[in-house]
Length: 91
Ligand code: SF4
Ligand code: SF4
Image (spheres, rainbow, N blue to C red):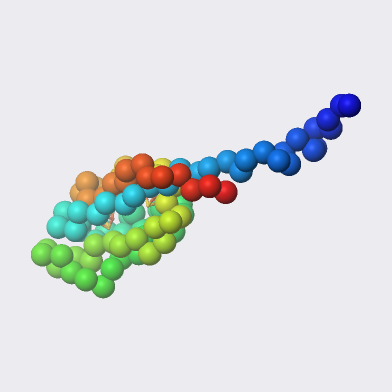
């Protein structure tokens, strides 16, 4: 019997999506907020705490949503944030 195209997805495993572990080097941060503003997943916010230079470094408020795209690392002018690959999230 012929299987129709629209029936194919049923019974297949859901694809996994990448997940990143976020590393923030507080003392390098100048609190510019670029990483917060441009993260496509809204993972970051500027924290209430101060670093030694008197700036507010970011913190991950939604870290399960990080897809390890690396954009925060690319956009940070101080090399203060990066991600490493973590276990992928299923579904
Ligand atoms: S790697 Fe991408 S999704 Fe994760 S915190 Fe950075 S910009 Fe956001
Ligand atoms: S982009 Fe870099 S310097 Fe700017 S707030 Fe984020 S971590 Fe700090």
